Image (cartoon, rainbow, N blue to C red):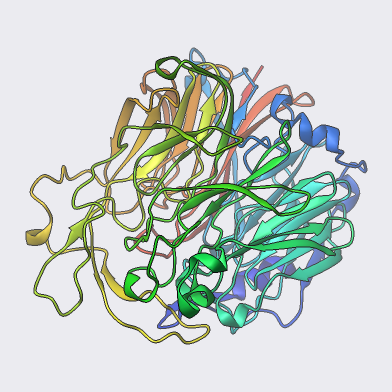
Length: 572
């Protein structure tokens, strides 16, 4: 069936998301949910068990959660595609998604005969696909409300899967549970009032029947939180405010920010959650929120049973540069840090600061702060008021460093791989009055500063893919990537020592993960590749597949939106 005949795809395609003075807004969305079923009988009927989720990282036939396993490695044990034969990797097919949207997600692959791919994109749209043929089996569009305001486009980065359900966050700061065989609605939970600026765009995770999610909206003066739901019924189990009230002066806690950007990471051995926490609010005017603004720009460790905070590690205290700690954490097992005589598990991430952070998982003690992945110029110096006659251009800019782009950890090399930005931004602070549902940045940003104010020591490279040793923090190799667009999306590594990444120039690249040598490239056209690669092996076809979503985001020069899913394959 042609996608133009699919009612749910048409509803998503007809929805318009535009940048306005209030932020990104939704127009012409459907008044109610739209489900279109095509061939649901093709989906094998069996539950995705907790055991399958626990073993997802070791299963070459699946990709059962956003970053493959709970530890968020984005690593596949598949080794059909190797350094020697990757040059033979071919494009199996491309398919039109049907909604010219932000394409920042990771598809989920449930194994079977056939396997089933659950693919999402904005605005709150999901499909079940037979990935062997690229056939849509059912599609669903959530009715995004037209009074929702969004910071950074209509992203949806993926789903969680558990038993007979999938779970998708929604632009109105909700969670929608769907029957994974039919696409029919099971339950919906609203986490907060979207009219105040709350929203959600990441993939949730599920562990032992508990679903973990949070809040976005830090650019709208909301108070950030995380929460857990019963994955079977949608009942809320607990909720925590990320910023402790006793640490804030006056009523600044009410607009504290400290929201969520990405999927949580879970340590099943310690039974601990690790959340990424964003900027304080307002972004640039720190005068209205004295003090360190505790737990913003932090790693937050939480007990999944109660929501009790165990520890927090802050990367940018009293942040006035928008240095959210936005990317997913990774749990790395049995890491030897020789210079500290430390051997054990660590929590690791890259920050917008462009430093990497290696932490002890039970206390949050910082073990290693890594070398800068990109340039640091005028970093963490006082931001001028808008009325001052002083130019101020900082690097990293407000997009990082490492923004939300999910990294990968390769067991074969012992290295982590980050997409980073090396872009100068000019910012100023000013006084702004808080109004619910309106931007509350406390300043202005010039994303393309005049050439004469850009620091002389800027190297001119806009972005890079960087390999880092988490044990030492050393940058082992770097591939500078230049463009008039920002480098977005995630990376993926394989058991055969390959690193896959798409670029803003429309290229899909396979690297030798050990040294950064480009072993294979494929031109996917003029649209930026902002999605995250995933891979799986299908015993029915005896092929290893690599899939990625193609299309940029409308926010801050990330390239034109698109609507393509590209699937590559190589026979065993």
